[in-house]
Length: 142
Image (cartoon, rainbow, N blue to C red; front, top):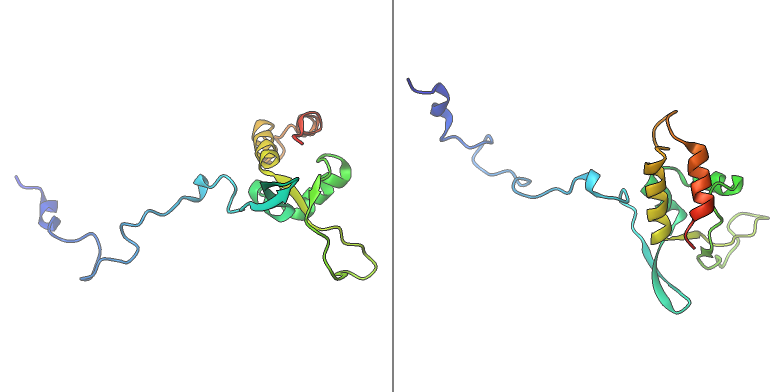
């Protein structure tokens, strides 16, 4: 007995006469992007080109908001950024001195991502926050 589905073997896997434009292209999966779309930029520090992330890019990479990272820094959970972009030429907020954007090295971003995974701080109510903060304080790369 013949398989009834053999009748459809000659048909294309899409309707119409033209191949869809998006067929055959490999689409990069979001899960493959370790930094969630954040891109480091090159800065010259002490005469060497270094890949650095701004606080916004770091926040994007770890899935948090920049304001969250500023709070972590203020509370001492995250060390203060060692490097900053140059100060803006004009005052942006009245009566506030601008210092430039915080910059974090690729090594620091990797360290933070690994620490977040190790201590499961992304999981709601399951993370070891005390261990995470101690690990950051004791081992933060310079």
